[in-house]
Amino acid sequence: MSKPKRNQSKNIVISTQCFLPVLGGMENLMGNLAKNLHKKKYNIFVFADGKNSTHEKQYDKKLNYEIIRYSGIKILRKRRKIRDIKKFINFKKNINSIFCDSWKSAENLVNNKVLNNQRIFCLAHGNDVLAGKNLLKKKRIKKTLNNCDQVISNSKFTKNKIIDLGIKSKKIKVIYPGIDTCNVNSKKNTSVFKKYKKFRPILLTIARLEKRKNHKRIIYAVNDLVKEFTNMLYLIAGEGPEIKKITKLINSLSLNNNVKILGKVDEKEKAILYKISDLHVMPTIHDKKYLSIEGFGISYIEAGINGIPSISSGVGGTKESVINGKTGIICDPNSTSSIKNSIKKLLVNKYIYKKMSKNSKIFSKKFLWKNTIKNYLKII
Image 1: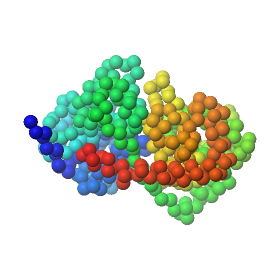
Image 2 (image 1 turned 30 degrees about the vertical axis):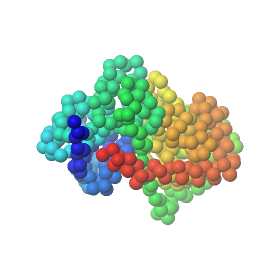
Image 3 (image 1 turned 135 degrees about the vertical axis):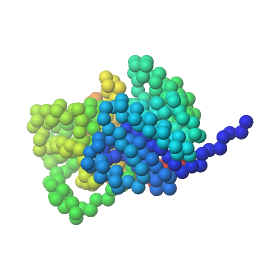
Image 4 (image 1 turned 90 degrees about the vertical axis):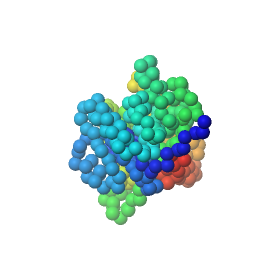
C-alpha cells in the first residue's frame, strides 16, 4: 500500500496555553512560531488562553493572523477551546498541521482526533514531561505523546526524558528554541544608561523568581564579591513565588545598593539590560520537590547574542545552551564559592572574557528565528 500524500495546505492551527503578550519562554516560543510561520506565507489560526486584559486586546489587534482567546476557569476554558478547534477543523477541512505547546494542549485533541489528514505536533520543554512518582500523570503523558504524529523537544536532555517515558526516539525531533534580536537606541534611552553608569561590573539574571533559578545562592556570592568589586551591581529581572525570600535576603545582607529587583520587564527593557550588563548569571538547580529543572535555557542564548558570557550549572539542558570554557563557565550551583570564583574569573581575566564574548555571539547566531524556522518547515 502506498503512503498517503502529505497535506500541502497552507493552513496551520496553534493550540496553546502560553502566548504573548504575557512574558515567558514558552510564550515567546509560541508567539514567534506563529509570527515566523506567517512570514513564510502560512495561514495561522491561534487558539490561546488569555486574561481578557486591555493590553492583550491591543496586542491581538496588531496581529496579521487570526487569534481566539479563552479566559475563565481552567477546566471550562480548556473544554471550550477543544470544542472550537474541533469545529474549526471540521469546517475548514484542509488543515496542514496542528501545533500544541505541550501535551496538556494536545491530550484531548489526539485522544479524540477528528481526522482530516491533519498532523499534530506536540512541543516538549522539560518540566512538562516530568511525572515523578505520579503514575497516572506518566500514563497520560505517554498516551498523548504516542498519539501525536511527532514530538518536538527543546533539547537532547528533554528528548531523553521523553524516551524514559516509553516514547520511541524516532518520534521525537529536537528543535532548539529561537531568539530575536532587539536593537536599542542608546540616544533615545539616555536616562536608563546614565542610571547604571556608576556601576561596574553589572551582573544580570532574567528569569522567573523560583527556587530552581538559584537567585539566593547568587546573592550570597555577590555578598562576597562586593568586598572586592565595590561598585558591583546585580540586576534581577522577573517575578515569581521566591520574591519575598529574595527580598528578605537582600535586606539581611544589607545589599540594597548592590542588588536590585526590577520585576517584570518587556522585550525593549530586556534588550537594554543586555546592553548594559557584563555577565549573565543563572546556575540553575534541580528542584526535585516540585519536579522543576531547566530543559534548555533560552536566556543564555539571548545573553550570548549580545556578547555576554554566562555562568551556568550544566544541570538539565543547560549543557546545550552554555558551552563550558567557550561561551561561559559551568560551576557547582550548590557551592557559593564555585559561583563566586566563576564570576570572578571572567571579570578579572579580560582575555578569557573577550574570547567568550566573541564565541557567545557566534554560537547564538544559529538560534536566530530565521534559522530556527527552517527546522519547522522541514517537518511541515
